[in-house]
Length: 322
Image (cartoon, rainbow, N blue to C red; front, side, top):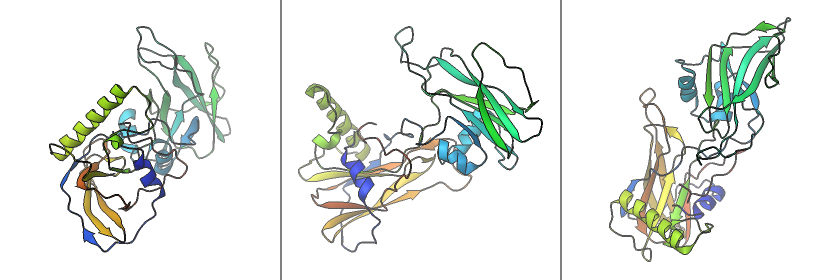
């Protein structure tokens, strides 16, 4: 568990020039593999239906590192946006309802792209979609995506009536590949930075639960830190934890806290993101982070570089929820 202080630190700090001062010894360090890849919800402003004609547009709705995963889900080697485009449909928000057997709640229907047509004049493409009953899967934000040849005209989306098939009125467009995401495309996690100065800060202070439950959560969080740092104990009267992450990155990336300096009445934590060489990254994504143990400092702490702002996107969730 990580404290609410992490969010505050990452949201208000401006970029600082290198700080001269006294280097602070790092007593222990280790990777922190407990941060989520996504924020649990779609990026802000994602429309329910969208034609995606470029990698930048895809990054806006699915994350900066989504292209390889989207291609894999579609079963294609790559997407050539000079010749192709994506049509994505989520439909209106559906209520999550209980399922038989007491499992987690689910949206009642999948989203399906039934067909794609172009009008006789070749000016408008229409994407016909519908809701269909779900199978055994649990759905939270069902998303259907199809790959078609690029079309630079106007794209419209039309929902078909349930149980009725509307006759085709235009020229059919070949759907070259299709994929379905039960939980939609979620916003990638941004970089995060945090400090834990006390035993109480091992969990989010806003959590409301019986004290035995909170104490168990603190103990679990402490155990994770001890394991990551390979130490037997942390004395919060004399020591504190400092962490930094790089946000969602290609697999193989790692974060290094390179130096902590005391000067000008504050601590400056310098950290670096190491990314894999082009073509050398294994498949998948990671959220690399490192945590270090240092002597306790009660004053101002700055990170260099600071976590970037996320314009137009929801802020990060409390870091105590890993």
